[in-house]
Image (tube, rainbow, N blue to C red; front, side, top):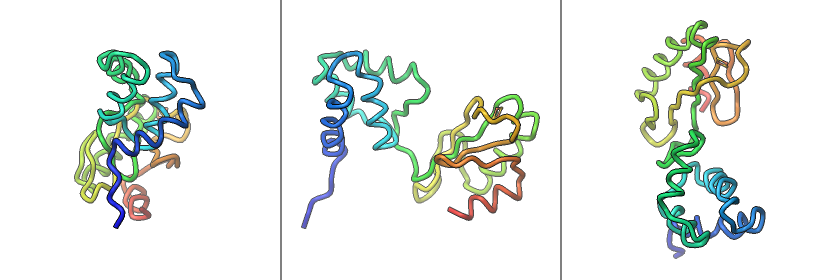
Length: 158
Ligand code: FES
């Protein structure tokens, strides 16, 4: 029977391709981290220590970069990521009620993952489609003009 892949195995399988595309230099760090996050949905600590060794960098410097950019995540997420906009237009359009509805249905708050690892809820500043407010994204799909009722139906689709 084939043994289960560890996080380290997955990181080590992903890195050669990323080095090939971006090089193995200090200035390739951000695209390499993005590549790892695209694959695993977060950047595991195992990846940081491997990358630090291979790029001859300090782990603390890599953590510095990760925590500077809000796009990076250091903990695992659910199967689907909900990005709920709390920008001005969405706020005015009722984002708070929408957020409460999501939290109530999934029983999670910001940056938490629902039971069964299905959804992770994140709040973002602006999704860039303010005329559709209030808006959220699930993975790469945008949902517009949200209401409490719409939220329920949308989440049931998953
Ligand atoms: S404020 Fe929500 S999309 Fe811009």
